[in-house]
Length: 112
Length: 111
Image 1 (cartoon, chains in turn purple, blue):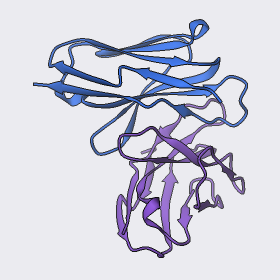
Image 2: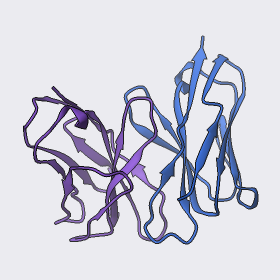
Image 3: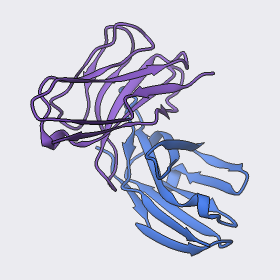
């Protein structure tokens, strides 16, 4: 079944830890995105990718980094997590032909 | 960049009531989507509607691109309709395929 998967769904970690949030899609989409959302607030784009080996920063400054080595995989990494990184992170993907975006279930990150 | 305003910010209904949510945007758009964010945080696609009218069951949406607004209609609301409804747009002529989100409408449907 075509879908978008994110792991972990929930993560509680201590300050200074390195973490990677996983996102995979079986939709066959070229474009992938990471959004950050604080509780009750709108989504902000932090990273996007047009395809393999393509990554761009979004509108909201973020200390995270991303990679796109495989079409279906778009992980997000925080080298040293801080309490200010506490948020929900949502991954999305879309086709090249038109930009209807589909979202994964999200990862709720809490940094203590 | 493009501005997206949603109204009302909050809406409380009794089960069975109808409602209209509005999305205004400040520039021409390539793409407009409506989403429902459920209590678990997942965004569910409702409509991809850069122009025209679409219907899906009790929900329908209309986008009047020339006047820069979109409306989401919910009829015979149910408690499961509760959550946040987001409008998101991609600015016309943009090459980055980026969606800009509104702040959302928090809908509460009481039994």
